[in-house]
Length: 130
Image (cartoon, rainbow, N blue to C red; front, side, top):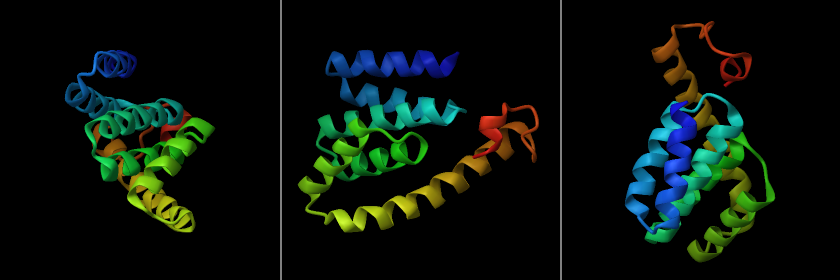
């Protein structure tokens, strides 16, 4: 699938320090991912690429979005480290996560309606739940 290919290519670009290409490919991955786990992985890779480019705000937003789809300790630690660099209090992260979840959910629903019709009936159950 395109999602797996974009994900693998993003990791390859990250490992070869081609971070801008990693961002471009990871954004494509985000646009095409339909299940929560893959979408979370795409956002995590996007965050790592932004982090390497020194774009901490974008990295923070990507990590935040990743955690909305897939909770894990690695992403949580990356989010907290980025928050420390941005000098954001950890208490504020919970509020930002809820706001991010609302934005991501609305964007995902709009995307699914545009790509698959109003009900998204052709999609697997996990994709319809977004």
